[in-house]
Image (cartoon, rainbow over all chains, first blue to last red; front, side, top):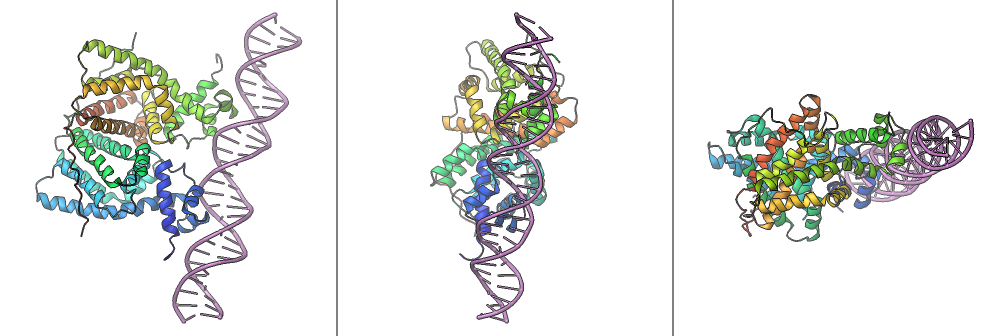
Length: 224
Length: 224
DNA sequence: GTCTGTTTGAAACATACGTTTGAGATCCGG
DNA sequence: CCGGATCTCAAACGTATGTTTCAAACAGAC
């Protein structure tokens, strides 16, 4: 083995186990066992379990944000001043994901699951880390989204972005689907891209639904 | 105190703590501490922590599924043979939630968060429990959904239901949103209903988006 | 009041966790 | 071939967890 591949073996095992079981349900002993590495290696190389979690994200997210930045450049160059269509903005995300150099055939599905977990589990510390560390592409995406949906109120747009994120993260994170994907090892990329292809029209249509009408005082009477 | 209210105190505390912190991040000592109850009481009354979790769900979900059944009856009576509109089917869910007898002012928001967690955390055992225990209203909802979207292929419908579930569960399980909701103590119920009111048009529009066109061989070339 | 079944209480149990330790192995430039 | 830095290893540490134990308190029936 070239250099210390212990670090990568730990990251590979951690990534997979975190995706399968969640963060706090995955112990360092499971990780080091799967990675065939000594238990102390995690604390030696990463410092703590939390730092390991962040490293797992950084390994994927840092190159991805570079790729995403280029894709945004392309999009804006293509449209040359005109505001981009919503569908195109969403497609940029899936295309960037597809463009990413894949580390394994599991590909991006594992990572989507992790992103979803980061937003539901882990009482905020990981979420804060991600939003601080990758605020640049995140903010750029938000700005594009705002330009593409000028008819929406800020509140509606905020919530609908939440809905989009939820549909995406949850679908990708469905452990059953993940298991299916992992089982038929071939055609994994196309499966994920197929899901993405189905997801984009759904999200775009939801995003462009008519502005929500709130009836303030509406309250149902209790059942007799 | 009338009879053994220990059980209810445990359930109340557990419900709130689970919603705030997740299941495995909440210890029995936190629960019994908040409930001002002896530690052993949980194992005495419920048997195990997992059984406690299921009891928390059952306390809410059992009456809810009754209410939901009535709401479905109403819907079908109202439409008298004609197939119900998609928006109406989705609205039945939120209306049933609003109709529920509220146990406290926190109301249904806590429970929505729990449902979201049940589908993202807890490696399947809770999800299986819920789907088995409440398969009747679940199946009825699916059947109505199928009738309301005859234009969709089975595959598209399957995925879009996943998307809807994801958007809902994720949004409801977002802990920051919950904190915001809990912070402004007044108007909690309306807040959750407001989210639901914004969610329904989004979901309905996404569900009724044009059938997905799959271009089979499409594959992006890697970046140079 | 006394007895019987139910519920509570403080303490202990066994286990699993993240982390630390210190000695040994391994590597690589000199 | 040596010597200092880097890395691995088995073992232990301290703490937290879910669960169990068993005696004490309590309840209602007779």
